Image: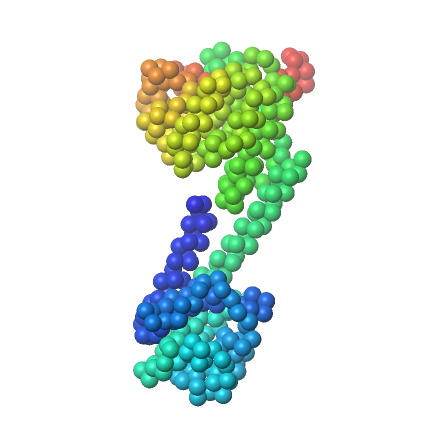
Length: 399
């Protein structure tokens, strides 16, 4: 479940709890929130007591002819002690069919003045203990529910907007380009690999766009497009240099991903699996890594130290290389705690056979410290910024 989905779920649960609290406080049989959609009234949330009518969430009926319609148009009062005593409600078939007794209904109004629907609660008979003052409590709750619903609608509209934009990027042949950042042997300063990084035509930063893509359910298609674009440039990479591509655990276990990789030599390919993303299906991820390893493709765990998995889980799922997160590398030259942590990583990798890469190296002092600690491979702006392959591997003397 994404962060947006978790927040939506929490607010929906809050609305449901509010319905129940109001219904039980007033001692009524039914409480519901309706939404007006075109000329229909949809039961969006419903709470009923043991003897309440079973109104089904999601069902709808004509708006005209409902209590909701007449309340919002002012033809029925918001508080009806006995609907059979009012000429409008007495004539409505639903009054006898449900039946409807004491009834309270308040329009749910958004901040722009638009009526979203109604907050209603009623009993099946007349309840003399319900007084006009009780309507004030329903009005206050309706205002609170309106805030929840307006926030949900706003996020839903934002999600649609982001989804449309990301779909446009996925389907646009010029929606993204690939740049490459070298990984070097920090003793010899020789390039050993290049990491493929996405840049988007709409100007959105890659971290933000990929996060949005996963939030709207398009993370895997976007990552697959990025990997495919990187693989198309593989022939331009010198034969002694590896290519690193980045994927999330969800993409790693997707059907199309492994098939895409068969177009390039396996021994020159490294798949970086980010630790920032939670692994929801650990056995599937382990199986996918084993399949790639059987093909001769190296597996690197990206962002180690900043994500969800401990080293025991990394060992359990299988990998060839660990890539320390930039948060560990930043200011390592002046931070003895980070130096001790990296020293432990170096020892761990030497004893287990893992490769070790330090990413996010931004200063000469950080690079020198990492070299002194025995880190073999490094990457970062201090070494080289991302760029096109023809610039990274331009012959000496070319401008």
